[in-house]
Amino acid sequence: MTQSTAQSIEELTQTALGELVLLDNSEALEQWRVRYLGRRGGLTGILRGLSQLDIEQRREVGALGNRAKSTLEDELEKRSQEISQARLAQVADLERIDVTLPGRPVATGRLHPTTQVVREITDAFVAMGFSIVEGPEVEWDHYNFEMLNIPQGHPARDMWNTLWVDYVNEEGQRPMLLRTHTSPMQARVMESAQPPVRVIVPGKCYRYEATDATHEWHFYQVEGLAVDEGITFADLKGTLFEFARRLFGSERKVRFRCDYFPFVEPGVDMSIDCFSCQGTDSSCRICRGSGWIEIMGAGMVHPQVLAGVGYDAEKYTGFAFGLGPERIAMLKYGIDDIRHFYSNDLRFLRQF
Ligand code: PHE
Image 1 (tube, protein in one colour):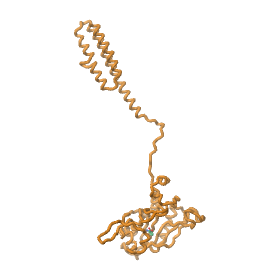
Image 2 (cartoon, rainbow, N blue to C red):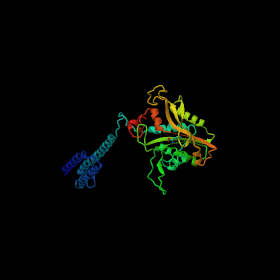
Image 3 (spheres, rainbow, N blue to C red):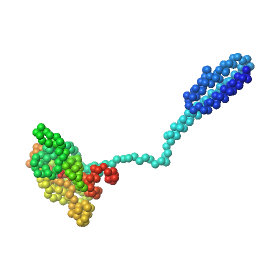
Image 4 (cartoon, rainbow, N blue to C red):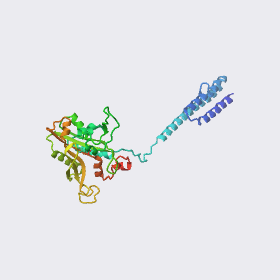
């Protein structure tokens, strides 16, 4: 009896240990513990049978049983630690970072060349005391034309090929359009403020136009307006001269020639001397040999426009100007086709 009990203990221990090394998770370990060490477990069963033995044998086999029990318990603990360590190592493996790998580049955006030039232009005027305002791109005929001294049927309307919005009012007219220039903001600003006025208006404009290297059907303009008592043409010249030197270098000369816009009198266009060839190259791509580059239209605000917004045209005078930032950017960066700006070709855009 002693012999066979001792043998069963030995066999059970071997079987249990043999199984234990194959287990790889804590649920399996718990099942194993219940199977051998639990209240109804194998070893417990054997030890319970000890009561049948006499005292001498009981001591002997009992000692054997207790040793087997603590062996199983120790091995269980060991296995359980091995399993959790293996799990940790697995996780660490997944998270291992190779610090010698080159970093992934972060894609950064950039400002569109037009935006960059618009900001350069507005910065120059802000430095001279102008404030920036913006206005609607969908505009009324009233502001785009009427208030600018260009009544219905006036031949000057042909200067701006207009995209009309398909909206007919109660009188059967089509009074809504995509603004053809930023000049309507002259009237809107003056309607809502009293002099002194000094504003700069960047914004998008639209024209019903076939596109080519120098024409787009949508483009930006930057409008300027200054109105106060005693403003003269000298103020216009001084302000625009300062602007030209800021954008194109302190050496710049400017030239004003008569031009016609119904909302200014006198009206001019302003040119700068060619910063590329200084007028010395008859085949210069930028000035085409003339030595001068036209950069904007300007003039003294027409008294009719001042009166139209309710200003006293006897008391107040002012000047206005309008320029095209894409044209300025083309000159500055030697871009030869305006269509590059809005064709969204990254090879073009990434150069700025
Ligand atoms: N709005 C004019 C144009 O689009 C430019 C301009 C603005 C001329 C202000 C004079 C004064 O051509």
